[in-house]
Amino acid sequence: MAIHQADLASSRRDRERVNVAAMTGYLEGEADLSDGLDLSPELVHSLRRQAHALMTAGRWQRCIDVVLALVAMGSVHPADPLMLAHCYRALGMSQAAEQCQAHGDRMMQAMGLELPEALEEEAR
Image 1 (cartoon, one colour):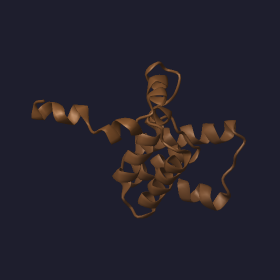
Image 2 (cartoon, helix red, strand yellow):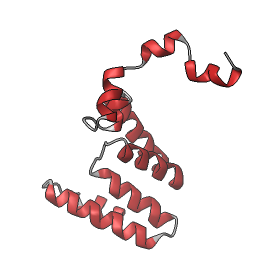
Image 3 (cartoon, one colour):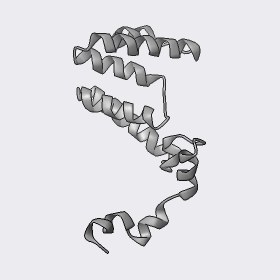
Image 4 (cartoon, one colour):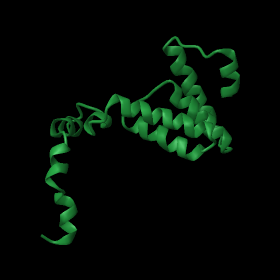
């Protein structure tokens, strides 16, 4: 086997770890990407906590990257557009921040959720 093909074949152990049914479900449009990758809900939750920690630490772009990856995987939480708005605002991208904030507000309203006033003022 040529060296450039060795990575494609992978090891037997790696092939056994792949959940073919989950991957097939994603490829056929029956599951979102996180299901196709067979990611546990705990891992998705941990990634969202990491995004919050990055935002708190002022790592704006890293937080945006993690949140957008979660959304691309099909996991959306009401806090996501609010975190994005905060990060975009900190990066001076006011139009993107306003769009994310408006989306977050609509999402929270549709779900019947309200932020406490102190948090709402901080988010803006």
